[in-house]
Amino acid sequence: MFPYNDPYAMLDLHLQRANRLAEQAASARRARETAQPEVRRFGRWPRRAARAAVA
Image (cartoon, rainbow, N blue to C red):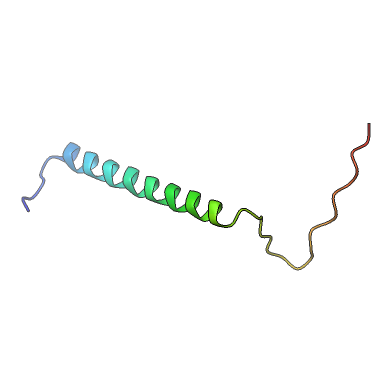
């Protein structure tokens, strides 16, 4: 590897890597959401029953 002395090149490489990591995280999140479509809720109390629609 050659050392990068240009700060703009370093910034560009950083932005490329950050974008790649963000895309990987989004694809992993999409895969996880499609694998488990039900909503999991963490907490002490169970979710309240849905109210009947009024009006």
